[in-house]
Image 1 (cartoon, each protein chain N blue to C red):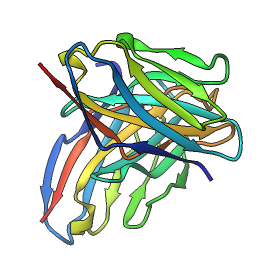
Image 2 (tube, rainbow over the protein chains, first blue to last red):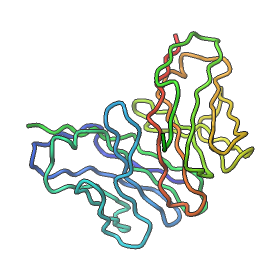
Image 3 (cartoon, rainbow over the protein chains, first blue to last red):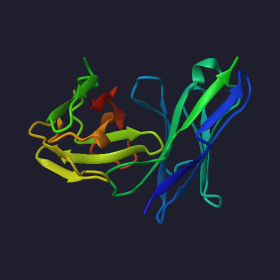
Image 4 (spheres, each protein chain N blue to C red):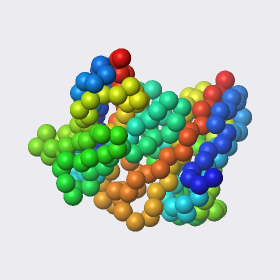
Length: 113
Length: 114
């Protein structure tokens, strides 16, 4: 079985501060991991994905995530938050041969001016 | 318009009525998916389709019916809507090759069942 757990349903950071959104996965086989972002009243947009090529993955809008097998984690970070980063972020997992993604419950990021 | 579209964007209906949510994609992606998004649950898969005329259940299929007669369309029908089906519904599509390929999401349909 596969699942992801996102710690913290709400995260607030000041503009310019580090963004850290946590995701831990559970998978009995090597996983593929994704971070999606959802802006208000919109669909989900892919930020980045891990497909075993490199453990540090860089995505769009300055975000990156590091796959740590020993910690079963795939935390999302951004060095300096911008007001436009305010959104809901979802971590998701799948595996080879699977047909769908398993999503976490989401983390709402608020950026304080 | 290129991409993946959903209609209607907003729908209010009554308990017991039949409702169909439409999804259309222009990429000729083989895979299409229907998710529902609920607070505290994230997105959960309802049904998916690997190709025209091939569909399969996801995590929460009860109360829903899908069909896929054409590659580009994947309608979701609630045969007799219930209040518990009030949710935001997202359609997504993905290329055939590569399980790690990105799923592209539509803008969603907000459904309210009274």
